[in-house]
Length: 191
Image 1: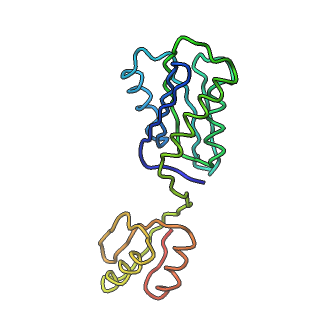
Image 2 (image 1 turned 30 degrees about the horizontal axis):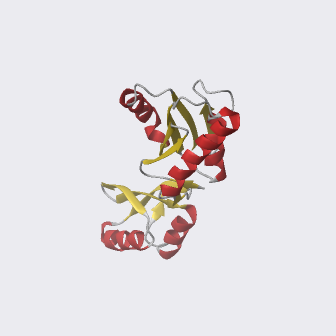
């Protein structure tokens, strides 16, 4: 599965109709949709679809035809996201009608092609399920633990300094196990 960290746009034209696909991280979906509607007041349709992982690691999907004939726009855009195994992503296709009806097949192809163009431009990042945990260590071991975290590409989210030191860290589960193996006498997992 893959995700993106920024906004990618592609424009597809068919018989004077313009399809502007906006591929965005899911967390930007609502604000981007509102700003696109304000930015394109003369656009006829704002077709949307998205896929994201919920707190139970289940994929939640949704699509909207926004007034286009049923199944000709939302489902095809969602199918592109599914076909590329994209998650935590939304797509909004802004359509300007060019005066010529494209028919059902033409709409399906146009929406799919617009989204595919945006996906091909996007910098896809491989999704890796990460775990967050709290570890405890002595002050004298801070440098060693920070070095190992850097080497293993473990993110230190937060540091707490009291009678002992606690780091809130995040990485793939296997990477965290490697850290624990390397530093088994140095760190204690708290969560």
